[in-house]
Length: 397
Image (cartoon, rainbow, N blue to C red; front, side, top):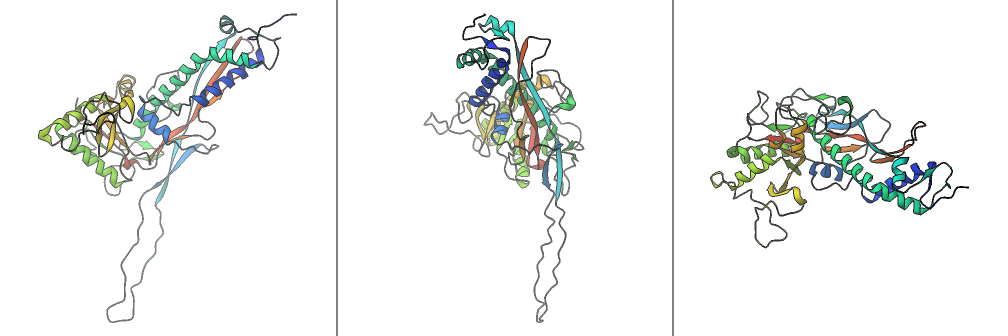
């Protein structure tokens, strides 16, 4: 009779032990705890709202206005009569519907690979392997689980930046199956685009379904593409966009920008002829007793992505993914490194499908391959219920 050491595993136990190891790993290192160098993903993960499953779309309610019928009334002077008041029917809500997308990443171990790492797998080993087997398999799993988590995080972050039409990297997939990211929802000159099943409109009258923008051709200008907002006009135009966002849903609470924009804004702050320094300097560091610090290498609040700069009291976060977006989205009219987004987290939400948020998987072994598989899946969408609470600005090179 064959004998086995304490690393021998029954074939039926391998998938289960690996699944337990992956679950334990995700529990201790959840993807929710996103690295600082991904400020968009980190911000969205912090305020995600699960959506009840079993439906074709994720639905958001959009208020189009108030439909107010408010009026002043009173008695007619000298007479015991009063004005008639009126009532109306309110039709102030529209539904926007976002398709949800499914994401997968996974890895495999062949029996030869496991054997090369000191783990024997047979059909006749004892079932319900001991904890020693789990420890041994977990040791083998560590590197694969690390890169699975980090790789999933990287591609999800890229996908939340790019439109669904642009390949975020990773495995082969179809454009019509990707999540629609920031560039599908908050765009420069995006009039006539469809978001959530509703067509964006020009910024006229009672417009409510479009974000704000400035590419140097004018705030919310719908004409030909501009050449970028100049340094001299940068702060003034940012203030204009900020006020427009405030009018429609409150102040933005997230500012992310590319390298070129951060450098341009810093230069505008230091330009005394533009009254920059007196108003938009920087936050004091936690380490320094000096009142101000212009050294972006000092890590404050948000780690390495914090630039030392702020606007309207909100830190300007440098987003390293903008550089990668320029590589993946090389044909874009508006280079990512020159962009700055004003985002309102009350009106931009990551909506994972309930019960489908970063789920460990263990597909069955194929009958014609001596290999074992483990995966990670996520289903959901990025949604907005108020586009005019957000803005994007594009500066000169």
